[in-house]
Image 1 (cartoon, helix red, strand yellow):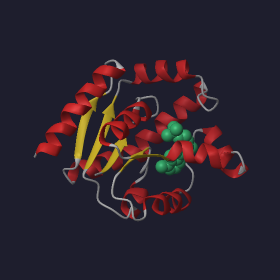
Image 2: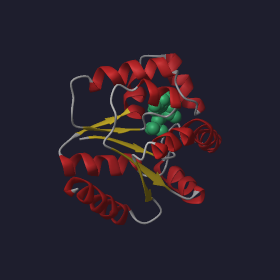
Image 3: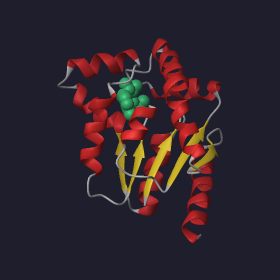
Length: 173
Ligand code: AMP
């Protein structure tokens, strides 16, 4: 099972990706966590993350394609974030889960989690980057009929329950 979970920062995709990985016993691959780790030894990456921008496509694609090589079961969290990334990905996902959350809820959640790259300016920048670069990815998977949209506004548990229902239905098809 090859899954992708997408949505703006603060939508809860990390939490739900972990839930799905545990549920289906598949690997959770989180591009943001990988890059934050890289940033500790790489100032170029650190600066980009701290500005709320995206790292260059070729850099993240290389990392992700290496990790997923020869793997059949995983959930990609936070990748692809641009159309180029989506087109250069070396597999077709079974399903792409789009967690859709109201902007007000996103800001509230991001300010609560207190991560160093979650400043007010950054949150705004990340949302703009999301609208400009990631929404086209969502539309790309929608056109391919691979997208399921999940309402990300309810509680974590409720969203998990809804995702479980969708996955069960998909697996029983
Ligand atoms: P996240 O935890 O998903 O919000 O990611 C943290 C930061 O890592 C983002 O703000 C970007 O700077 C960078 N990042 C994560 N995933 C990607 C990606 N697929 N493409 C480019 N940059 C990314």
